[in-house]
View 1 (tube, helix red, strand yellow):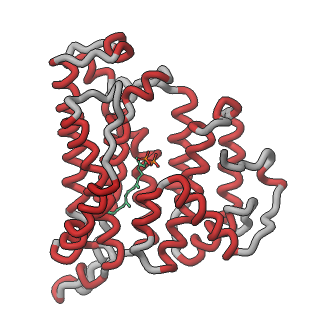
View 2 (tube, helix red, strand yellow):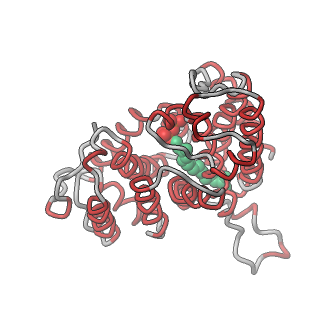
Length: 310
Ligand SMILES: CC(C)=CCC/C(C)=C/CC/C(C)=C/CC/C(C)=C/COP(=O)(O)OP(=O)(O)O
C-alpha cells in the first residue's frame, strides 16, 4: 500500500532530491511496468520528471481507488490540494514531493491539470453513474487528459516541426488538443476493459444515455448479459475511443524527437486492448482484455518506424 501522510502539511521531507526521484522511479516501476519501460526511452532528465509526475498521479488515484480508499473523505482531498500548493510554492511536504517540486522548477508547468486531477478523483467519491457522454468526458479529462498535459510539458515540442520560413513569427504549434485526446482515448479504453470489475464495485462508467440507446439496462450490465444489444453498444464505444486515438496520432510529430517513440509505443499498446476486447467477443465481464508481453514487444518496431516517418 502506498504511504500517504496523515497530516500532510506538518511533515517535512527527509530525503535528498535524488533519493526522492529514486522513490518515484521505484513506484513507477512497481505499478506500471510498460509505462516504466517507455520512460527508459527518454532522456535521463525527462524520464526522471515523468516518474515524479507518475508518482504524484498514482498517489492521487490511490486516495480514492487504493486499499485505504474507504477512509478518504472530501477533506482528505482538500488536504491533498493544500499539499499540492505547497509543492508548487517550492515547499515539498513528503519524501515523494521533493522530486515533483524539482521537476516543476526544471519544466515549468501549470498547477491547473494537477488541481483538475484532484477534482476528477473527487468525482469518484460521490458519483457512480454518468448520464451523458459529456459528463463522462469531463471525468476522463480530469483523471487522464491532465496526465497528457503534464507529460507534454516535460516531453517538450520540436521547434523544427513548427518553423517553416513563412511561420517564423508564429509561436510553435503545441499539440494540446492531441495530448488531451490521447488521455481521453486511454481512459475510455480503460473503462471498456474494466466494465466487469467496475460493476462488481457498483460502478458504471458507460454513459447511461448509451445504454438506453441500445436498449440495454443497468440490470443486464450487473448480470453480465452479452447479446446483440451489448455487442452493438460496445462497438459504438470502441469506435468512439478509436476516434480519439486518431486525433492523438496527428499530434505526435510535433513532440520532441525523443518523446515520439515512447508515445507511439504507448498509443499502439493501449489501442490494442480495444482489438483484444473485440477478439474476446466483447466479454469484459468474465475476462480481462490483456495484451501479452510478446505482443507489446512486437509493436515496438512499428512504433519506432512511425516515430521516424510520421
Ligand atoms: C499525443 C501527444 C501530443 C502527447 C502525448 C500525451 C500523453 C503522454 C498522453 C497520455 C496520458 C496518459 C498516460 C493518461 C493516463 C490514462 C490511463 C487510463 C492510465 C491508466 O493507468 P493504469 O491504471 O496504471 O493502467 P493499467 O491498469 O492499464 O496499468
